[in-house]
Every structure is written in structure tokens, then in C-alpha cells.
Image (cartoon, rainbow, N blue to C red; front, side):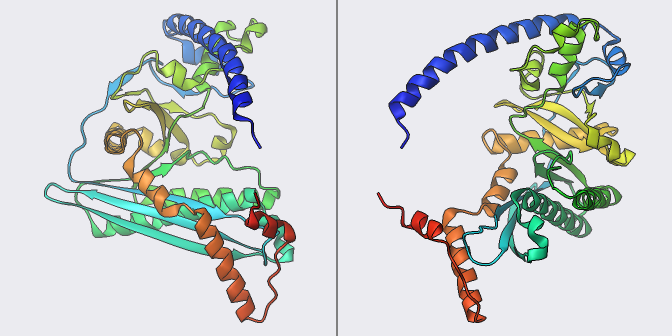
Length: 373
């Protein structure tokens, strides 16, 4: 059992060290930033070399800001999220659950409406598919289901409704990052399935973006590291600012209700994207926090589309008291709670026994369920 008193003492000791170091790094970073933004060739000089970390590409001034306008009615926003019950080797047959939840919010001049959907999918694995039972594979499968559902619902909505603005918001990045799947064939399958769904959004001109709350990206931090090193001339200056992230840098110049310039992601996977789908991003101050919005190239080059995304994302964040209400509601539709997990295994057991099958539970699992004091 965790000793709470000793834990508090340890946290207090560590927090003092971290806060002092963090404050020092922020002061150093701001001084570097104030000098770096004076270099009109900053981006050009950075792009002349390859770096062992991510640095973005941008046009114009890196500290460019734009005020986000108010949203125009009517508008609609779709959000999709997913959750899962992983395969448990201590519980019966090899199967797992993916639950995809969504919410469609419509805001009209005279009235508004909301539509919720929750769709569970049960996947059964065979012994030959043992690799398809691990958490990494299931996570990737869940993301594929989320994207497919979002595309299908977006297309359906656009065919029925032509008035107002429509945006599809995703919780998290649009940059394909789940590369932990073991087999290269599986990686390729997921990557090109992902691209195929993004292509459908492009063909139907469905405006969409990934909304990243509390982003931990470090591209702008890396820009400062490169600049401080004299663009690579002083290698010893390339290893500092390790405790900062882009939120800390953006806070120097971004005010509530503003967005940054648009950056192009140079993540290695981005080179596999078709040109019109390549990932771009900007930072936005929603008043409660600084968030990162990601969208494809075909949206990034259209200022009106970017403005629509930012307007709606900011409006949704305000309605959700800091986090987009559509993403929160989609999560609520998707989340699988402990009682749902128990119900899932109970139903699997009953269905298995109905088919005259054997449902075995390990003693370890039974002991945990008993939870003796």
C-alpha cells in the first residue's frame, strides 16, 4: 500500500528542484526567442541542414499572430472518439472490444440539435493471429475504426445538409504515429488505410482537424536550440531546454483568442503522405490553455477554411469550459467503464457456454475480482 505521507514528502522535495530549473530554462528560452525572431532568414537557415530532431517549416515571421473571429451560425461539428477492452489472457477466448462513440452538434439560428451514436465492435482472434491481440495492434485498429466512422458520418451529413459550416474534429493528432505494430505488412496496411480515409475527406471537401489539448511537441523549442547553436556551429548548445515544450514558447507571443502562423510538420512519416494530405499545424490560445490544431495541406492553403476551423474550435472550447464540448461528449459515448468491462466478459461467458464451449478464467483473475482486504 502506498504511504501517502512519504509520497507527499518526496514530491515536495522533487518539485522544488524542478520548479527552479524550469523557471531558469524559461528565462533563457525567452531571451533566445527575442533575438531569434529578429532574424528574417531564420527558417531559410534552419532548412539548409538536416537536424537530429524535428523542426518545422513556415512562411513569414515565426511570431505571426492572428485574431480568431466569432463563429457564424448556423454551423455543425462532428466529433468521434474510441475506447477498447483489450484481450485478457486470463479471461476466456481470444477476443477484444472496440467501442466508437460520436456526437453531432448542430447550432442553428432558431434551434439547435444533438445526435449521439455508440457502436461496439467485437473482434475474435485465432492462434494464427496472435500478433493481432496486443495493445499496440488494438490501439491501431481502434484509430482506424474512429477515422472510418468519422468519414462515413461526415459524408452522410454533407449529402443531407448544405447550409452552414461543417467541421469534423478529432481528438489528437492527424500525424500517423502508432508505428509500434510489429509486422511491416501490418504497418503498411494501416498507413495506406489511413491515407485512403483522408483522401475521402479531401474528395468530399470535408473540413477537419486534429485538436491536441496540452500538446507536448517541441518543434519550436528545437528552433531555439538550432538558433542558439549558431545553426550547428556550437554543438554543445544543442542539448539544453529539454524541459520545455512549444506551449512555453508560444506563450511568449500568443494571447487568448489568437492563433499562430501555420507550420508544416517535418515528421518522418509525413514524407509518405500525398502532397495534398501532408500535415500542417498551428497553435491556438483558447483562453484556458494553448492547443495545437492539425490539418492537411489542402486546408492549410485556404485561409477561410483555417479560419472556420479555428472559429469553431474556439467556440467549442468556450462552450466546454476549456475543452471542446463535442470532443468531451464523443469521449463519453466511447468510454468503456469498469462495469462495462465486467458486463462484456459476462456476456462472452454466456455466449460461449450457449455454444457448448468452455470458458476458462485464471485463478489470478478470480483473486483480483474478490479483492480481499
